Image (cartoon, rainbow, N blue to C red; front, side, top):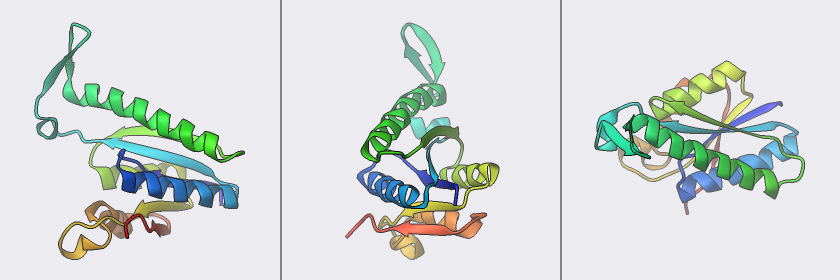
Length: 148
């Protein structure tokens, strides 16, 4: 086993999944790929344009920059927490589940780690993104218990 992928969106649930994925990667001698996804729908950001440092910037670009920084921070926290773990932070733009699946396909991942998050309906136990990843994943999916 060489490559483990975990999605990270900054939530406590995602952090628990990332911690479990890190422990799994360390035990298996695999690299941990921490994927943060920025939606490409400007409506989800509330505005199309933001102003950063006096320059107009598309909302997706502004959010992507902030999430890139957060992804790097979580990667460094995980990298420092587990001696010998190689962490590869990645930020993608697009629908979350599809982006994680495409990334896993591109790097030929051995496993994707997802957290279980309560929402509603069929995805009540796992969360809609986890269900979509399960359906489309090119490799096994490990479900980390992130809620009680």
